[in-house]
Image (tube, rainbow over all chains, first blue to last red; front, side, top):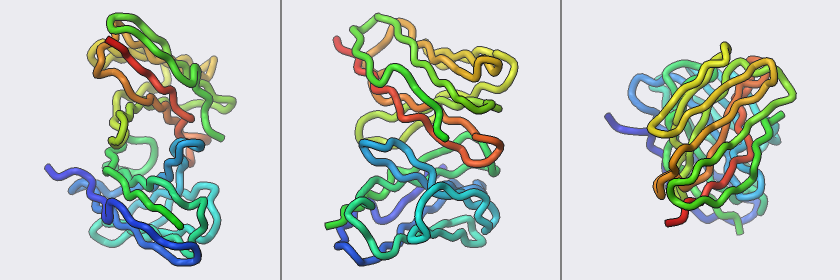
Length: 113
Length: 109
């Protein structure tokens, strides 16, 4: 059974650009959550999607957005990149929404120069 | 509001025991524990639900006291493979699922 797949694994952008990250959940999982991980802040919740609807959103500016497709695949977008957006972005999937067992992908490491 | 974890870091020798605590100022409905090894994604260890139950995973067990709004993770006879950062996660007010800041555990031979 394939795990959670995130692409790209690494990317470098410059300030002001935008980026789109992709996450393919485990087959059958309908909930996808996104987290930002930095050394100083730990795992910060970005948002959760279930059945193509954003269920919850963390305390991040509007530059961070996401969506989920009918096949449960999810994308997150960050516009007008800032240096502070450099982080590991982790996607996690679960069978249903809410506090369930999360299976994480390997992450997308974003570096903003 | 994320839960609080203590200690921030701990160093052990193989075979020693450790306790990691997770507490919240808000009511906890459940507590999840994850471990993240260096350079890897977090991996689920266990969920504890209301009722003060204790669960185990290998020689790692945990308890949950909802009255005190805290959970403790017990690592017994630690092995080198236990090294990593341990995160507790909770659902705050039935909404966002948030993680604590993590406890870095280093097990030395």
